[in-house]
Image (cartoon, rainbow, N blue to C red):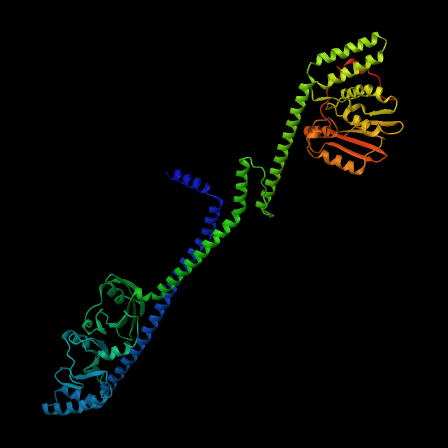
Length: 610
C-alpha cells in the first residue's frame, strides 16, 4: 500500500512542469530552513527568557529575604538586651524563688514594663513583649494593646525545648502577629530562669516585601516549615496551607532556593521560593505561566510576523526565479511542439553559455540540418521525377529509332559510305546508353560514351579541336554517375572553341587522391568574363527551373551533390582569353566490373579531333 502510494507520488512529481518543480524546490529550500531556524530560535529564546526571568525573580526573593532576615536579627538583638538586663534578671530570679509578694510583683512589673517599653517604644513593628517566670504565673509585658500573645500548649512545648535561641512561628490563634520566643537562661548560673515571647506584627513583614511587583496576577507571601501561610496580602489566607501542587515541592526542597512549575486552578504556575535566615520560613512567589512568558509570546508574535513577511518575499522570489529559469525551456518546448506540426520555420534566439543555451544552439543546428535534408530530398526526388519523365519520353518507340539508325549504317556500308555507317552506329550506341535505367557506370564506360560523342563531333569540327586524355589506370573501375563528362566537354566546345580563331585543345584528366576521385576538363578557348563567371558560380548554388531542364554544368553539379553531399561537386575557374578549367570531386565508390564491356567500345577509334 505504502509502496503504491509512494510510486503514485513520484509519478505525480515527475509529471510536474519544470517551472512548478523549480518553484516548489526554491520554496522548500527557503521555507524549511527558515521555519526550522525560527522554531529553534523561538524555543531557545523562550527558554532563555524564562531562565532570565527565573533568575530575576530569584534575585528579588533573595534581596527581600535578606531584608526580612535583617529585621529578624534586630529582634534577636532586642532579645539579647532584655535577657541580659540586670533588673529583669533579678525580678525573674526572685519570682522563681517565691520571694516576691503580690505588692512587690506589681512594683517589679511596673519597673519591668518601663524597661521593656523603652526597648520597643521606637519600634512600630513590635506588637507586644512578654517575659514569663518559670511557672508562667508572673508575667512582665509591654507594647501596644493588646500586650499579650496567647500561646497553645503545643507552642509552649516548643519554647521549652528551645535552648536559648529565638524560634519564630505563627501563633495558632493569631493572624495579625508572628511570635519570636525562647527560653531565658541566667548568664551567671546558665540555668533557665524564664521565657521570652515577642509578638511581631504581620503587617510589618508584609511591608517589607509588598513593594515588590510580580506581574499583574503574581502572588508573593511567606510560609512556615509546615506549609502554612504566615503572611499574605489576603488576610483570609493566613493560617491556611499551600495548595497541594505547591506544598510538597516547597516543604521538601533541599536547597535554600529554587523554582518549579505546577498546575493549579487549570493553569500552569511558576513557583519560586527562598529561605529566610535561620528560620524554617520561606518567601514564595506564584506567577501564572502566561504572565510569566509574556515576553516569549511577544517574541513569538514578532517572529511569526517576520516569518510571514519573509515567506511572502520567498514566494515572490521563488516564482520569479523559477519562471526566469524555465522560460527558455518552455519556449524551446513550444518550438518543438511547433516542429511536430511540421512548422520548420522556427529559431531559438536564446543566447547563453549555460546548458540551456547549448541546447538551444543544438536545436537550431538540428532544425537547420533537417531543413537542408528536406530540401535536398525534395530536390533529389524532383530531379528523379524529371529524369524519369525524360526517360519515359526517350523510350517512345526506341526500337524504331535504333532500327532506323542500324538500317542507315548498313545502307551506308552497301553504298560505299562507311563513315556514314560508323557515324550512325556511334549515335545509336550513345542514345542506347542514354536511356538505360542505371544511374552509375564504371568510369571506363563513361569514357567510352564520351568517345562516341567525340566521334560524332569530329565531323562537325573536323581538325579544329584536339582532345587529350590523362587517365590513371586505377580510376577506370570507379563507379561514377552517367553522363558527367559529356556535358563538360560539350560546354568547352560550344562556349570555348566554337568562335575561337585557329585550333584549340581540350584536356581530360582523372586521378585518385586518397579516397577522392578528381576529374578535370580544361580547354584553352576564349575563357569567361568575370561577371559571367560570377553568375555561373552563383547558379551552381541555387535552384532554377531553367537549369533543371538541361544537362549542363548545373545539372552535373547538382546530381553529384544529391548523390554524395555538399562537400563534393563542381568548381569552375576561367580567365578571359586563357581558357577554362572545370573540376569535379567525387568520393571513390565500389568498383563496378567492366569485364563485359561491349565490343563496340573496344572497336571505337581514339576520340581525338585532329
